Length: 378
Image 1 (cartoon, helix red, strand yellow):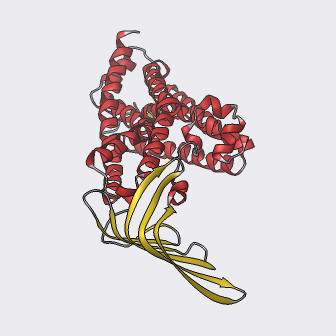
Image 2: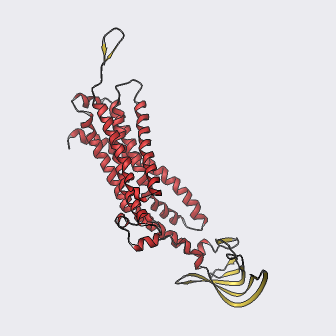
Image 3: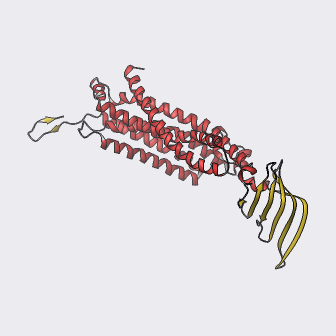
């Protein structure tokens, strides 16, 4: 690679690292604050909060990198212009097409990073995140069995525990099961134990009473039963919390392109929806070179101005917003009709045409302007 290309590429990579770090930090801190409140309120430790925020990092980075590439390209081009380095390069005979080569290499490099994330690290992070969420949801003692407050582990179920003994026994327990309005039951017991089974956690109630209120033939019927030991299955309350394998984003791109029956049954989607997710991943890295090239080519339009290149910067931002708007619109259309998945590649094609048009305008000779005295001015 020629020295000029290496110089421009090194400048872009340095700026890209800085802006990516800043943007990722802002997004990550914002995400970490919400996770901190949710997890600590459920009785989790700071290490669990740190693990969850770390698992969200690949997702955040995959979203931030194209934006960081655009900002680095635009800022780097503006700095090269202000320091007259870009003017010197053009005076040496380097055309905008030639100067765009290191920028394109930079954009392809960012696109490769995004591809590694969306095809590898992000699905792995989502899978691990679902596993940890399920493990925490199944941790009944930490999440739901908190003494001294009414809790609602499932819709229609109310749970209250007066105190938890040092040996793990639950003292003075109250459960109201009103999931079936026509068959409601209230359980009370002096003590209870949490027992792990293959189907999930089970509460063993000791020395208690159950009161069942049942509607039958338009009449209410109340029955009271006293027991010395009774098992209450609470595993069903947490079945809906098992998120493992239920999200398409947890599977590899290869499996989504050719979905099998196991995947479709686990996620409860059609084969077209699975392929749509795969093509969204394939199309996402293509926007990174487009963002970098727009940030570079838009700033080459127009001549020197003492007021700077703010108009070109605004134009570049608007063009990037236009490409992103088309990407969102295409995703919405494909979401309603998965058979339209080729539309996902349309924004990248339009963005490439915009970059070519900007470079063509930048390479076109500018006509000389005549001043009011009849002379010519550059």
